[in-house]
Amino acid sequence: MQRHRKMDGFLENVLSRLGFQTTDEQRDVLVLNVLLLGDKQSGRSSVGNALIGGQEFQTGACVSGVSVTTQLQVLSRKFPAYFRRQGAESDLMLRVIDTPPVKLRPQSLQELCPDGVHVLVVVVRVDQLTENSQLLHHIESLCGPDWHHHAMLVFTHADHLEKAGLQPSVYLTQSSDWLKSLAKEVGGGVSFLDNSFDWPSVRGRPLRDQLLRLSAKNHHKALRLRSDQSL
Image 1 (tube, helix red, strand yellow):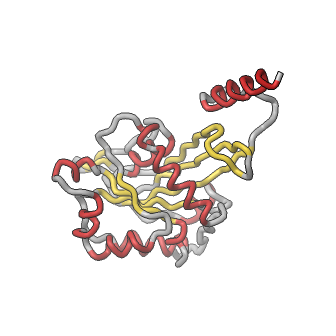
Image 2 (cartoon, rainbow, N blue to C red):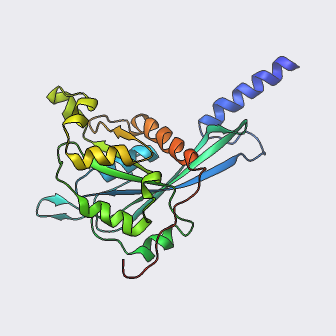
């Protein structure tokens, strides 16, 4: 009997990871709101697709040959039995919000995330290192001075570093002062995303794990968005 129970438990675990509900008992679900922030062509959509493990995020209109996301895009994905919490398996639900590279209206984000944002993902291309102090000022005006504690930095198109024979650690030491400072300030650390890899579900796992660790570091508390109309 005990052997059968162990086998049943093993099968339930395998099926649950494939997305099948195997028991009537509902697992706890951790819902995290994730906000993508970055300049045009920074690779926000690629990061969003990696996080949800798909290709659902689409780019917007093309202006002067540059692909631009023109409106907020929100996609959700549940990952069954993704991690253990207090000794029990828990599902992870990510709500990923991709933002246009223009100044956002705080009330628009508040409508999407009335409870706030758990993780801010600042996206920068490795081959576009122009200082973007305006972006950082906008993030602080939107989220307040404590936004660094909820933020992680993702460099996209990391395959360009490999072609250039550069290691990520060497790249960081040679980057601009504002990027070095940003990399040190964000609470979630730095990641590099290889855009040449065609399996978003696989390349996104390290990002999801890093995101989950950052949220846990903040006790899964959301960062409240400012509502001041003057922002």
